Amino acid sequence: MRARVTVMPKAGVLDPQGKAIGHALANLGFAGVGEVRAGKVIELELAESDPAKAKAQAEEMARRLLANLVIESYRVEIA
Amino acid sequence: MRARVTVMPKAGVLDPQGKAIGHALANLGFAGVGEVRAGKVIELELAESDPAKAKAQAEEMARRLLANLVIESYRVEIA
Image (cartoon, rainbow over all chains, first blue to last red):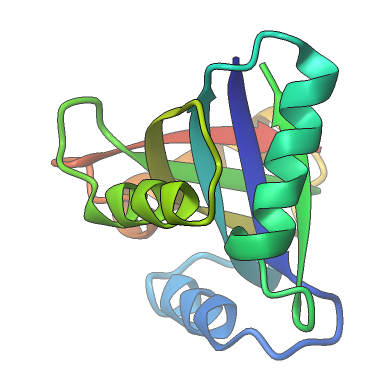
């Protein structure tokens, strides 16, 4: 199964990369851009064929490696 | 409207970050992990209230700033 783990900075955590993107968009002339948050997405090909087990495995990967739970939250989708 | 731009390395483009994550997962004892691809996701708050126009605006942002179209592809979702 294919799993997608999306990792975003938690609300309230400073996101300098998002801020930089917001400034760059303004400099390029884009108007009406509010908050910008930048995160990462990791797509994994898993041998596990059961969707529930694949999701549990991807969530454990997120907790143990992919996300820093102090400042980031994660979301797992299975496709 | 809230727009989410997902930027991934194109198929066939070397992805050292994804490779490093795959190795780290194997070292942690996760089995059955195939290809791993790492990309980025940018969430934008747009003043535009028409979904089609917001999507067009986010796609222009992706083409002009957020994605390097030589090696990356992007996908825009509006929520």
